[in-house]
Length: 337
Image 1: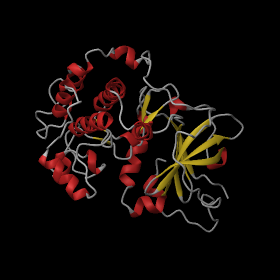
Image 2 (image 1 turned 90 degrees about the vertical axis):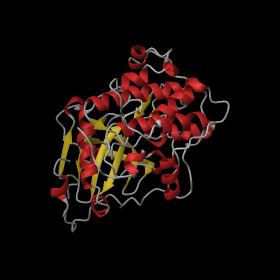
Image 3 (image 1 turned 120 degrees about the vertical axis):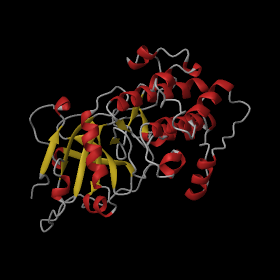
Image 4 (image 1 turned 60 degrees about the horizontal axis):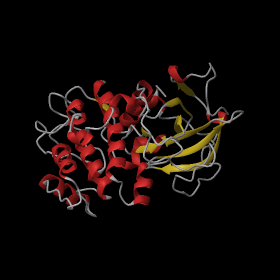
């Protein structure tokens, strides 16, 4: 029985007219797990090319009411092309699963490197923040709100530059949207209060990210999401004395509850953030061209090295082999995969 029922290759990434299926890839090791799927390192058969394969179980996507998010993720990641955003090769599906084949980013999550280091020196944090700003500026120019900025969704490539991944919460928004989504510690007040939100939430999340990179922990933290939300709404930010006043000013202006006053959401948009004194020595064009030497280069021994990723229990070999009696009852929900 064929393991593919539909697929799409992103035109700019098309290698030839071959239609990809699960049979074209050798599954090697789990790189990450999520609520309704896994990310695997895979090798394209007959080549020495390695990719990250995101496999999502249709029944779980439907059960958790994430159909719109997954279809949006596929549409958005297919249409964006930027040095600091992960590239996708193709998508396809079988009876039980949806698959996205992405470029393999060998340096792993920024989260892992931050935890290993404890916190980043200001120049290193500034480098990553600046590359994130360029990516957000690009996405916002396309009316795309990312909505899930955090260290777990920022990967480091083999040279130490960032690649933003996981567009499951991204959405094209011309004015406002009301969907509650994101990671508790990174949620902007307007999301929590269901006031409707837009691009400003990404600039709030940037403020959280910069704080966490510099200090090693987010500014609003608690074991309970309820108390995290309470702290966010109260907006009390504590800074240790070693955080310089310019970095503190940037963070406070990004973490402004009033969106009409929040840096990045003013008339100058991303340019206002770029012009903040904390970034005064950044050569933005050289950064975009990847001409700036990164402050840290991930270690790896081969093109298929996975040492920069956590280890996970592997699923059974039969997990992704459709039973010939299986019926694809969800096909019409993912018609563009």
